Length: 244
Image (tube, rainbow, N blue to C red; front, side):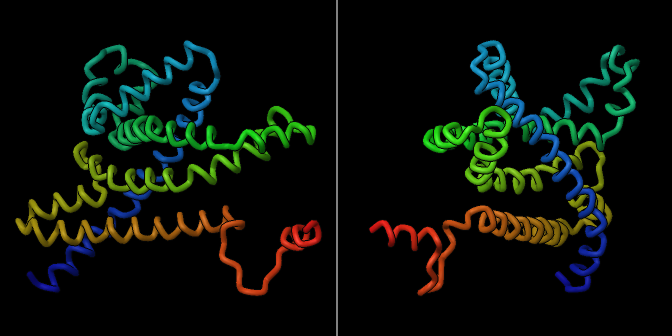
């Protein structure tokens, strides 16, 4: 092992970072749309929609992500109807196949996170909002959604970190993200340990930064839980003192 080789490996793997982040953030964003839709179907009270969402979650959480990528990239191309359809320009590209597979997979997992967040909203908050005249979309936007996001953020942050690591599977379908470039470098140099140590360190740094960002978001969304310096009195504390 030599420092010069570690530096060379770092320089050769760094160009894969933008693709890794693009795959992770784009698939997580699209998956969030699926997650809210699936959570809404589960909570709609409409039995067919509920069972459809349950089936979707069961399939995509119960099968390996690698199998899903293979089916989308290699399997769909076996059907002439797909090759002659309007979707073929997208499905023949490994980048978009990876995005589709990652989005569908994270949507299934995140839907349970979102559903748990929505169910965690206290009933008393909803009743108080209705007593103030809120209903429908306004109630959801002002009360339900902020509280649900606050509750679901830690688990959703974990899902984002898992998606960063899951992007490594995209190298199987020829995408040159961090793991893809690492595999190519190993085939050129036959130095497996050093290359994968550098690749693992890069994932570690990316996920460390993400955890810090998530913690900052949690801190910003939970002002009522922040530690206050001694002697600082909030308006709510003064009101409580007056009533006492």
